[in-house]
Image (cartoon, rainbow, N blue to C red; front, side, top):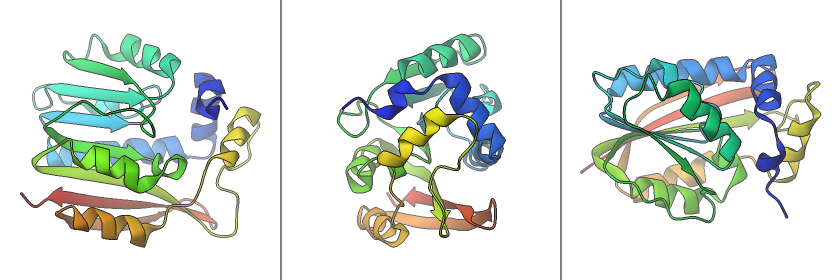
Length: 206
C-alpha cells in the first residue's frame, strides 16, 4: 500500500493546516524551540514544505536537516531555503522503515509525526542522533471525542485517518526517560474545544 502522505499535494497540506490554525501554532513552537535552545545542528522531522525554517538564525544554527517522506515537499524546501540556509540538507526517507544516518543533533523537533508511525521505534532512531545534552522537542495532538484529521475542503487529507493513531503520552514519556533524557517542559495548548497540542521537551542527561 502506498503511504497516503505521498498522495497529498503540498498545496492541499499547506492550505488544510492553515485552515485549522495548526500551521500557525507549529510555526510558533518551532520559533520558540530555536530561540530557547539555540542549536548549532537542528533537525526537523516531517518538515513538509519548511514551515518554521524561516526562523533559522544562521549565525547560530550552522546545519539544518529537513526530513520528510514526500520528495515533492523537500523540493519546495530546497527552493525556498537554499539561499537563506547555507548548510541545508534535505533527507527523503520513511522514518518508520529507513535508517536515520545523522548525528550530533543539538535540537530535534518532531511535530505531529508520532501519530503516523510506531512511536518507540521512531524515537529510538531519533534519540540515537542527539548530541551530548541534545534536546528533543515533540508535539503531539490530543483529541476529545473527535476525528484526528479535522475535515476541511481539502479531501485528500482524509486519507490520513487510515494510518493515524493517538499517541499514548505516558508510554512515550516512560520510554524517553528510560533512554536517559530528562523532562524540561510540558504544556498543553488548546486549539479548539475538542483538540489540543501537547508540547513536550526533553534533554539528554549526558
